[in-house]
Structures are given as C-alpha cells and as structure tokens.
Length: 296
Image (tube, helix red, strand yellow):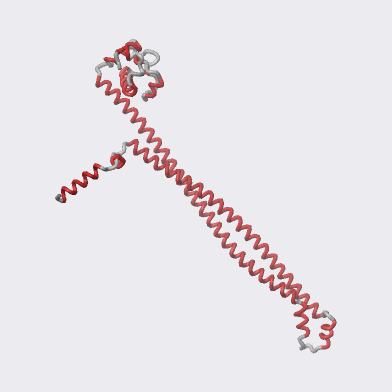
C-alpha cells in the first residue's frame, strides 16, 4: 500500500473510532454553555479557596497557641533566672559573711587554737575557711550552672517565640490575601451569573419569537385543521375567553411554555404558537376535545 494511501486510512480509522466525548468536545460551545463553564470554573475555585481558608484558620489557631505557649515559657524562664540570680547573690553574700565570721571568731576549739598558735603563713586558716564555706561554694557553683542553663533556655525560647510570631504574622497575611481573592472571585461569579441569566432570558425570548414566526409563516391567519376544531370546541374561537384563551391553556401550562401572565391576555398569534408548541411537547392529550376533532 502506498505511503499516502496508508496515511489516509489511518486518519479515517482514527476518526471512525473517535470517542463520542471527543467529538462532542470538538463542537463549539454556545454562549450559554461557555458562560456556564466559566461560572463553574470560578465556583470550583471559590470552593477550593474556602477549603484553604479552613486550613489556614486551623493553622493560625495552632500558631497562636504556639506563640502563647512560648510567651509563657519565656516568662517562666525569665522568672526562674531572676530567682536564680538572686539566690546566687544571696549565697555569695552569705559565703563572704561566713568567711569573715570564721576568720574573726574561729570554729572548732582545735582549729581556733591553731589560728593563734600557728604562724600566719601556715595553711590552717585557709583550710578552715575552705571547710567552713565548702557547702556554700558548692551551692554557688550549682546555682551558677543553673543560671547558665536558664540563660541558654531563655535565649532558645526567645528564638522560638520569634519564630512563632513570624509564623502567626505570615498566616494572618496569607489569610487576608486569600479573603481578598475570595471577595474578588465572588464578585466575578456574581457578574457571571448575571450575564448567564441575561443570556438565558435572551435565548428564551428568541425561541418564543421563533415559535411565533414559524406559526405566522406556516399559517395565513389563525391555525386551521385540528387546531381550528379544538379552538372552536374549547372557546367558540374566542381568543379572549377566560380560563386560558382560545385553546384554554391553563396558567401552569402557559408558564411552563415560557410565557408570562395568562393565555387569554396574549395576542392570537402567540396563543397559536403556544398551542403548536404544547402539541409538539405533549401530543393531543392536553385537549379532551381533540378526539372529537379526529386527532389520534
């Protein structure tokens, strides 16, 4: 098979087995369909954005709780640090007083005698002071270590607090931006719905005019044949007859045909057109007189 013929065959086969959806998608959209598709796209975006608002709100609440917890932890650390520093200062003062008191008055009798019997260069006094104040020095060392740990903890918590505040601020900004975008999208959706409603109303009006035009083009004057018989039996050919005009079309049915008001208030050509449309939709069933007019 020549290459050109083979290519044509492939194209024909592809078109033959093209899915119905693909063929349908290739059909140009009507203005109403295009507007409906655009409105649906915007509505879907709004729905997705609403879900993001919920997610952001939850994240913001968590960030706020985190920020509050870190603020409380920093405050606790600062309180503990101040208490530790006060304890260090008190222990240091107590140690100094203890050392002076020990040096001036002595302690145990043996050590006291060593103070006055020993040469000032002996280590007795220093040994006594070290023994007498050992407990306080150990406490001071522990307090210093605790203070250093608290300072490190406070620095870490301060950094965490800044992170929490930054996260909260960013989430608030994101939420505000998203709410602004949602407001804009709602305005767009409202405009699209208005345009869609106008397109539908215009299309309905066009169809009504088309039905009337077809009725006028098909008949010179009023409808004849079966319609004329039904009209005569229903209303004695009176287009102003109460209860539904010449064809006695009741209000719910009249409105279902896309008409406003009452049938008897409509022009004769409109009543004729709606009678034709009603028969097209429902057959001759709406008129009990149709059988007497030979309608089957």
